[in-house]
Length: 309
Image (tube, rainbow, N blue to C red):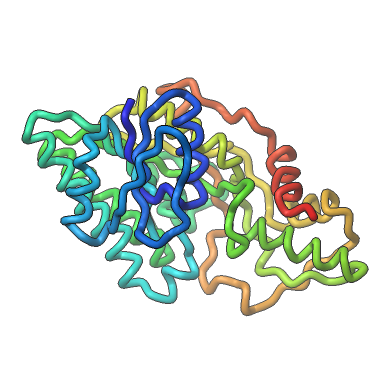
């Protein structure tokens, strides 16, 4: 299969490109010019700006069988600082890409678009796993822009027949994740605490419950959806189990080998945070047979090892 990956130089993109190459696919790595780039035998580097129609059309000249659309403003903090840009990149950018791909359908091609959304689109519901049929009630600019991306892509599917599948990944982490994100940040601060003899570690709110997957399991879910996802359908990608951030903090402290207590800081807390975000993955499992292969403890150990001296 020939696969175009937008945002291929991002956290998930790098893992996805390596996995696609390992299974023998041809990969077009679509990245913003001047970024860190992606290397590997069989990778075609493609300059890509999701806000530019000409750039999108040029990238699609790669003639992919499928496009995995990862390019996005992925940080909730960054989206809060500039909500307009989050909408331009995440929602309008997805609309531009889907429309350009639909033109290929009109020319006799039949590519598949996998739109990567977020479990955060469900918002602050109750303390039960979220199903794809639940209402979308985003409570952040990031999540709202992801709802916009879903709506835009599925409208193009209904109007043009562009094969479109939406994935809603819940919280995921792994080696290479930016320390701006909560779990790599925990590890970095815990390692600093160990170096100074322990003590308090600054954190945000530790009460929220999250459904945590390894990025490599998320990538496997995306590959499964490329093969078995039904056009026009939405699929949660999650473990289906909740853990509080407090529990995760203390387990990471054990793995780092430090006696440390969290010190919540107002500066690190979101004004609106989802108290419980766990995904029901029944639909994905029925459609593809996918299930997580990497245990939560192995994922946390991998995070710690990735920052080893």
